[in-house]
Image 1: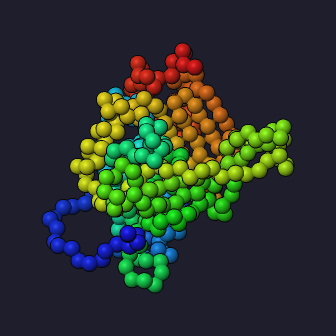
Image 2: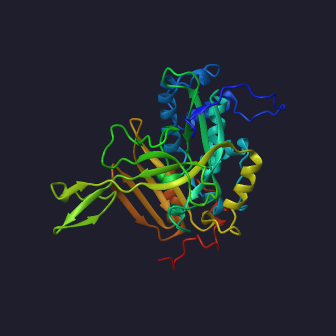
Image 3: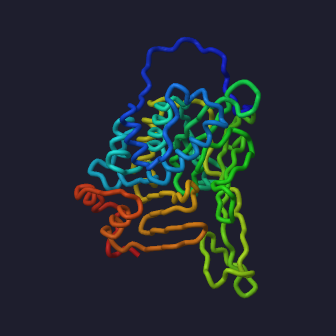
Length: 371
């Protein structure tokens, strides 16, 4: 069983492959784009920092990343090419220069390049989305490789020699973690400090999954549990997770945490760019039945005083703004013009005329006949 600690023994000499990185000028533009107030760690010292020194910096950086750069599928709908690139320079142009976001492989590829450019010891690994999320099979099952996560290695936070591994994921939308999680089985952490009734909690489980024929094989499973509010009506309970009515703020309200939901599983095996090329084609292809090609999604977290307190979400023709467990705004969009306006207002995504017109005729287009 892995302990989340990396093997520090020397490895054979590798071929001369240059890993992509961003220049100091590009990093400066990135920090400005996400309004990151703290100077980055010195490039030459970042990877040798202990967890105690690095984690506050990394948590704050991740907060600013997910609160400015949205998880979204827009390029598969509002783009003449309806295609996605995982090349770091093209991602920088899309995310930092143009102010768009991306889906899991785009965002985590970009963010891993940022962390590597700062000197952190990171690599990426593949993940399988849970059927509990996709609804495509038994809840304890998982699909094929379709997700990317970042594995970070820092000096161990305790006195034991060696490196401690963490997972970072800035590309899982509304149910993604908001800070690095140590690869420690069943170590529960919360999305906000201090934890409140609206917090989402996270944990990692190291276990076998039913689809693996070898009973000795194990994978890491990322699970989340939402907070919420239960409104008691006439002696009964009506679950209104994330909703709160001012006139009911008394004994008629009580909090209840949801159930643990498996989101995805992953291993610590490093994936190569060629692996993601195949995964990206499948995940962004209508021929493969990917939901990303039929649904417009855009998610951005809300950050207040460096604390994540809510999220703004576009899902198909619906927009929801939730803060501190309260739905402050809920809109059913009746036209493409309305959705384009909301994307610019709440997510900072400005579409060109060609991009706005590229959705015409697609199943994801909002038309007058949309219910």
